[in-house]
Image: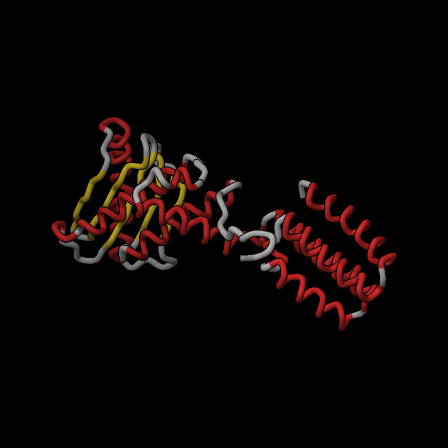
Length: 262
């Protein structure tokens, strides 16, 4: 276990952009994992909140999508007025699966592949899971261990996977990442000016190993331990006076950056 604690490499949707990314990701995952052609998340007023549509549609997919658009007003009325929860409709062009998401929104999945209704239990179960996950995201609920425990295993597992995907794909855009990058560059520049490039690399590498993670994922406690490691090594090389002066300056800088909003 790292000295300063484990790094939680998951991330909730703290911005509108991150929420949209999670919704898009979930629709894409549902479409691909169930071998469906098109996935859409709409409001009962006809607004499209999110979609997963191939860049190029085959003629049958295009006809099925146009068929959906032609029936959209009727579908919205059914959902809004009759509380329709799930519907499977088959046409010559393909199959349409509709699943409600709360009172004011719904999911639509389209496939032109041959489908036997009696063999769709697995797909429909996955569509229902996706509906619950999308509703959770759309209502901007947090993804905490307590909330995950209130869902069944499939829904909780999918929400947890989404937080991991968001972390991997979007963490580099967060203020925490930018702060960490700034701190790492500052400390390496300051230490390098005192010890030179050779010892610098050795000291920094050993400090990261001691902390148990790397710069992008550091927390305040990680940086505190990391700085202590740098100062201890600096003291061995340059003495107490230089180390004490550096520590005072570096800790003041660290406190300022970690407390800033950007």
